[in-house]
Length: 75
Image (cartoon, rainbow, N blue to C red; front, top):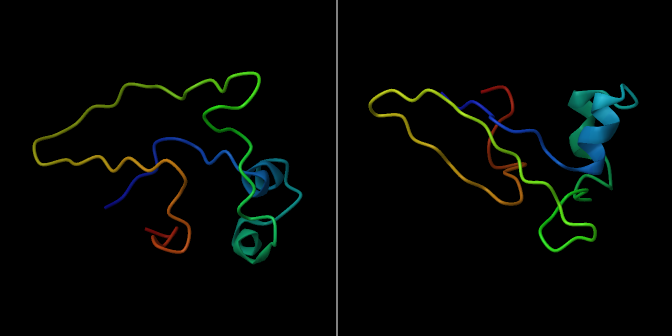
């Protein structure tokens, strides 16, 4: 089972959060790859951080620019 621990920092996610676009329609937008927070931006981006309980055998997948189209969001 995969669980997303942080939110996407994309224009489309901002539109979904503002209820301007339905999540199921987000993948069809031409602006789906527009990133709103990234390393090297001015002013500097604030990194997401948090604490999570892990069990034996748990794994963490770090991804710097998303897994859209590779991982099914329903999982």
